[in-house]
Length: 168
Image (cartoon, rainbow, N blue to C red; front, side, top):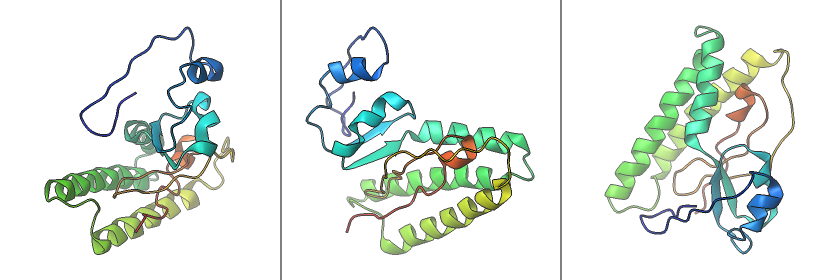
């Protein structure tokens, strides 16, 4: 576990990555903030108590690369989303360095519009792709300009809908 700032890092060895083993750590028992995680089902048990969940950006980019590699021309939207997520990260870093706690409304709106456009392209491109699933995980939201959103099984579905509402 790591805190958002440079401070606390907590390590613990567990015998497995099962839901029971993760819960047995008692680290998240009273935690109600935002959890950044991979898409492992063992984390789902904490969803109801959390303010938000963010799929790890490295995992999102890995899923997007997987989609783009299927057919780089047809799945070009996935490459654009990778670049957009990196652009959003750099914008957040710049805003933080400037002493801001969020992106300005115009920049955020532009990122969301471009994101939604490419997600829609991805949905249309892959709507008939065999093997798509519709299992969903709990809702997530954008906070301070950082994407936090639910994922679905299947690489192309993992990136759909990353932009929800950013708290005012």
